[in-house]
Image 1 (cartoon, rainbow, N blue to C red):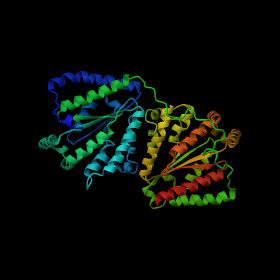
Image 2: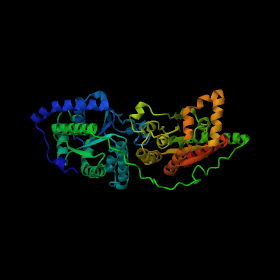
Image 3: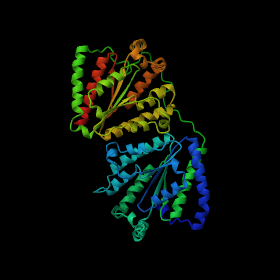
Image 4: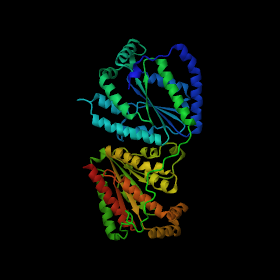
Length: 496
């Protein structure tokens, strides 16, 4: 992949000086069109060999753009806070909103490439391939969510890099830029090149291709990057909207009356006597308290998802969970309709930001499953978008579990008759009237559509590392104890 970037590309000063004024003007015009349209973000990655001119090029590029609408992220070694979350957490937090350009100096490619290049005993290709697959899925998701992903790789031949290091060390003004790490990397140039070429070849896709920049000549690389950025953004701004393909679903499937589903097979008559409930509540809250104080718990965190029918008792159940845990280490995140800021990012962005540090619990009252529930049923998401969300959600939860986050997901189910009883009760009791809204009544009219969505959701996202627990919730006592016991079992298994 690097042969074309070793041909000695160069731009003479006269050509450079003649092109730059027009280029800067066009860049600014296009940047403001991007800001005004606010239909997509630009995610610009800068990678490559040491001494390839990445920093100099980024500095020039940002000086040609309006800095108010450019976010430069220098992704060095992760902080303690970042190490306590999944690897991709810090990149998700830094994604630019629609209308802005986000430059990543160092990115989700850096660690996999360096780890493979510096590994003792040779490259661990299987591990690298797993990272590559995760990156491809992540960038596909960014592109599907509308982001324009531009990836620039600054390349130097081995001879050119050796010369570059010598020049930097010779000049007193630039000597500081050459560190022992740079020289150590140079000693591993051949392996670094092999690994980089493998990664670039397998991650250069139609949606997010790599552009390899020869880094020897300053003027050439600056014009190359600026002109490619200009071309890509202008093309996206003027491109016609393309209709989303319809998902492949059997439209002629026969209607089956009284078919069995995950919901119809629940025994909603299950009950627990009050005296038994009070004993069990003390037992399981006590166990939960002990588990969250276990010496191994500090190396884990817990994410609990609560979904369910309206009036199924999520709030009361959550209070029984939080009542057992040190308040300093538990947080409840209620999820409502997304804000304007959240709409300007990929839909999972607002959930990634809320992941807990080690030793903590985050409870989501509603969650990312809104994409395949309310957004599906109400038509807020196109079929293509909510269909692809199942895979994206599975990837999200897999990343959590791989990092040691214990994931517990609960669907609280009640019957249609019980829901009606609770709705009427809420209307009649003064301190409960705030719990019932017109939206609840509208959702009730779509009971069957929501039931279908729930069955699809559970069937397609219940995995070994993030299973769904169906909770029979007509009786609140029974539901609360089942949730507490299941949560204790999940945490205990995760700590083993």
